Amino acid sequence: MAAITGLGVISPCGQDTSTLLANLTAARSGVRLVPDEVFGRPHRLVAAHIDTLPAVHVGPPGVIVDRSTTFALAAVHQAMTDAALVLDDAARLGAGVYWGTGLGGACSIEDAYRLLFTSARGRLRPTTVVHGMSNSSAAYISMALGFRGPQLNISTACASSAMSIGEAARAIQHGQADVIVAGGSEALLTFGNLTAWEAMRAIADVDPDDPSRSCKPFAADRSGLVLGEGAAAVVLESEAHARARGATIHAFVAGYGNAGDASSISRPDASGQVRAMRLALAEAGRQPAEVQYVNAHGTATQTGDIVETTALKEVFGDHARAVWISSTKALHGHLLGAAGALEAVISVLALTHGVVPPTAHLDRLDPACDLDYVPNVARQRPLDLVMSSSFGFGGMNAVLVFERSR
Amino acid sequence: MTTTVERVKAMAAAHFGVDPARVDVDQPIATLGADSLGYLEFLFALEDAFSITIDQDAAEKVPTLRALADLVDSVATKGPQTS
Image 1 (cartoon, rainbow over the protein chains, first blue to last red):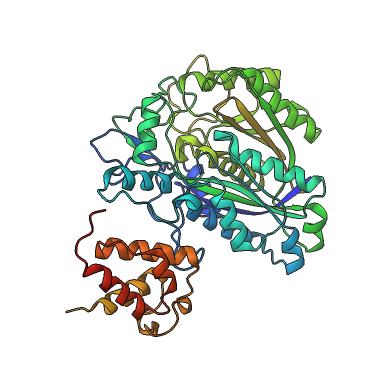
Image 2: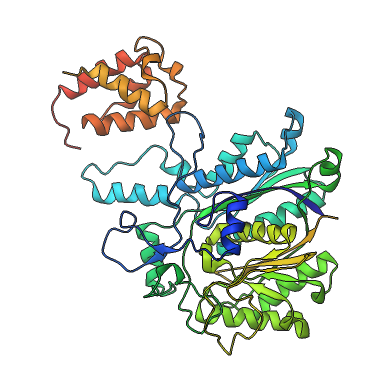
């Protein structure tokens, strides 16, 4: 089992773990109307935007990295500081970087195409290729830390960073590295990308009374997802490595399940989700009834929430009505490729603090979503075993099970 | 009136995050800490600021910011670019 010794977040609900947990527990939303400077024409769109970019100095002087990379480097720096991990040259040679992102340097690509298509000069920045490529954030992380061990960049839509954590934990378990920094980043709140999501008709309607309440997972009046941006990182170590240096172990990655639907490019399928959850529990060697909290995928789409509810019932049986389930996306939005990592961090914070953040904006119950989604108010109890689900477009499902440090 | 070399110096300081007082236009450009990609980005910014197109090979050979400013001047005096 890989030990989690460091956590870092740059999220619409806070740019450090304590602020994030406090905001989620109090159901304070990071969602609001998209700023006019982001969207070039009149609109009624909500998103979970990061207003103040984290201050990080990165890369060689004179090179401005992609927005998603700025988030990534700040989250990784936090996680490394939290882990209080200082490695010598030999240890850095074996340390890995496993990252996840849906569209990588999408802001750089969109900026480039805007210049190319709309300016008379039609030229592109020299960094367009290297900042647009999907592994740009992973590369800058490895450079910032000097980690020269195994490198992996995973792009499986909304399951990307959950898989990066799962695969990293597995690599550690198999002795391929003692230390891996894992997580994901995404910055897709651009004019082009928001328009693309709008075209898919997957975006939530703006709540007429309060735009910050527009995302309503599992509620009868849910109308779709709300996009967010940010990054989250974890420092993973072999238990022996963590114990030897006297590190504080927040939790263990007890199990990881990865399974495909092979049925639709956009519509989720309960069977793939069920298998991912079962595989994660089997790897953890735990029974469904032992899980106390599930941080659900819960995007607040009409179909998605019902499919997930069906899958939860199949996996948990009678326990489905007892287990606490919440979707924190109501508050921080859907971070897409970074969602799995952010929600993994939230799940670990829930474990270590014994507090379950609620599903916010859940006032009107949907008879088709009839489980205990911890509506609106956080709950407290000592926790030992939690699960985090991430289901990506294309039917790619990742489930992580975390166990409290003992 | 601001001379080209003063403008290039101010832009270099901002671009490479160096205190303008510490930028010596007669020192090798490498002392700014730029790698090749950072330097290319700087040339891109100069081209925008002066509405010119700088020959990459020539720009890679200039030793100092002063020589780069001369290169900018030599291109700029050829008149507006059409590209």
